[in-house]
Image (cartoon, rainbow, N blue to C red; front, side, top):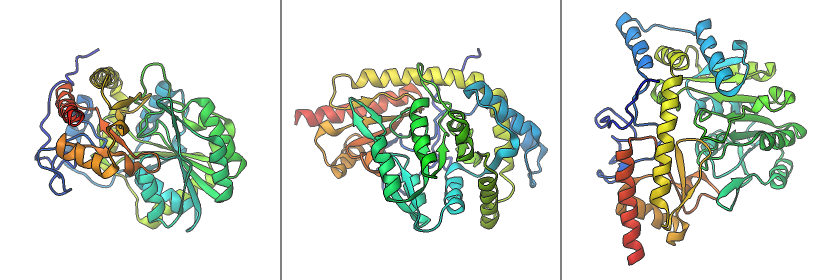
Length: 393
C-alpha cells in the first residue's frame, strides 16, 4: 500500500471554500475553526487529480456524456465494496443527491402528499419536502443506551395516519452514525411495501463504515424492494469531490425511472459536468487503496475523540459509519441557543447544531472529523477548555 500523508495540513482559506472562507458572511466569528459541513480537509487521490489534469491539458470542455467505461467503473466498485450487482441502464446521472431527491419528490408525489423521515436526520431532507409543498411526516428515532433505533410501530402508524407516499432513509445515517442492519432495513422495507410507499435510499456515506459493521444496499435486502426504491450514490463524500457536482441515481422500476427522467427534462438538466464524469470514473477505478488508508486514519481520529471526551460531560455517540461525529452535550445544561453561543463564541468552533437535524437533535452537536489530527486536536483543546471553564464556574 502506498503511503498517504493525511497529517499534512492543506491551506483552504482563499479558495472560495464554503467551509473556511464564509465565516463572516454566515455570521460566525472570523477566528472560529470550522468543522461543520461534510467535506474533508484532505486532497482527493492523486489518480483523480491526474485524470483532471489530463482533461484540462486537452483544453476542451464541451458537452459530454458517460461512455460504458464510466458505468463499468461504478459497477466494479459496487460489486467489490457492497456485493451489489448493478446495470448501467438503471442509472440516471444528476448534479447532486439533494438535487435528485427534490426531483424525485416532484416526480413521485403531488403537492400535499406525506413524506416520511426519521429525525434527527440530514436537514436538507426536511427542506426538500417543505420547499416542494409536501407534508413533512416525522417518525422520531429512539435514543436509548447511547444508540439509536427505529420505532417500527410508530413508523407504520405515521405512514397510515398520514397516507405517506414516500420514505427517505439515510444509510449510513447522518448525523447519528447508524449503519442500518439488513434486518432493520427489511422491517422498514416490508412496512413500505405493505402500504405502497416508495423508498429513496440516500447511501452517499456508504463507503465510510467502521470495523465490525457492513453497509447493506437497500434493494439487495429483498427482491421485491428492487421495484419500490431509488438508491442515491455519489463519489463526492468518499473522494472529497463535492464541488464536482456528480451523483449516480439507481432506479430499476421502469415507471419511476421514466418519471424521474421526465422531471429532469422539465427542470432542464441534461448532460452532466464533464469534470465530474472524469473525477468519478477515475475515483472508482483507482481510488480503493487511498480510501482504505483514509478509513484507517479516520478510525484513528475517532479513537482520539473518544479518548479526549472520556470523563467529560460531553458524550460521544459511537458511530458505526460516516466521518461525522454526533456529540450529546445535554449534560452541560444549556438550551439550544445557549449551546450554540457556547460552542461558537466560547469554544470558537463552527459546528452543526443538533437542532437543525429536527426532532431529537436538541442538545447535540455534529462534528466533522475528516481533517488532519493536529486540526482535530486544536478543536478539542478549544472545546474542552470551554467545558472546563463552564464546569468550574
